[in-house]
Amino acid sequence: MASIEEMKRITSQVRRDIVRMVHAVSSGHPGGSMGCTEFFVALYFDVLKHNKNFSMDAKDEDVFFLSNGHISPVWYSVLAHAGYFDKKELATFRKLDSRLQGHPTTHEHLPGIRAASGSLGQGMSMAIGTALTKKLNKDSSLVYSLHGDGEFQEGQIWEALMFAPHNKVDNLICTIDYNNAQIDGSCDDVLAHGDLKLKIESFGWDVLEVREGNNIERVLAALKEAKSRTGKGKPVFIIMHTLMGYGVDFMQGGHKWHGVAPNDAQLAIALGQLEETLGDY
Image (cartoon, rainbow, N blue to C red; front, side):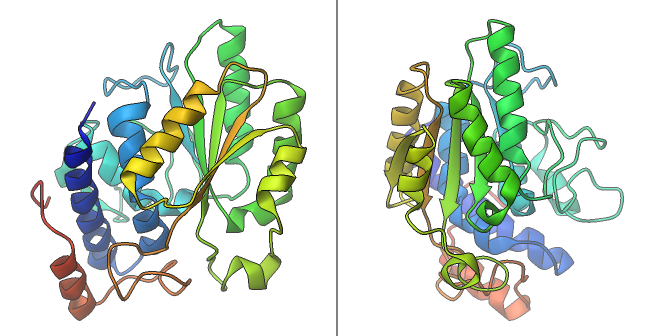
């Protein structure tokens, strides 16, 4: 378990990793990755009960699913800093024969990855199935998932939202990255969610909201509060408000940096705003 100050240092380094990874191959998704950095660092360095000696069955371990798999850069960086693999491997991101594909996959056998993702809408269903399996196996550990707000325009999400409360899947914590930005514009313009909290509560979930999703103390508190609410007959849901591209002023907010890599000049500016705290890979 890391201290708050340690997690802040990790967060800065992870953001440096993200912009360098996508710049190196001129492709990838920096915006959402940078917006969710605090979430990943809080999860892997405090909340999640996990083991870097990775096994697919996850017996007596918490399990995490990244449903919006395009923000793989932040996950890869955090997994490397958590000790799952050497951080030098981050330099292979999106390259031929790399284990670090643009969307997480399983046939490369990258430690930490238990399901391929990137086809949006499927991660909650996978998380629910895993949570039910843990119940059947009398395994008291938890299942976590992360979703994009644009992803919530997928119909399968809403089927899963109905299924989990009906079946009292109360060992499950799902989080939405609510930055109101997707590839084609703002979510409000593309397909508005309306009162998302009210909708999810009406399906039978226990819902928390964290307004400062780029404040690691707030995110950590929300995850711990969510954990305290498990085992009480309802799945738990966190609405986490973030800013896409957080940490670099010209990337922050809006949808422009959803899937655009910085050029050389932009990379230099970004790195000038992100402190190197743990050493670049």
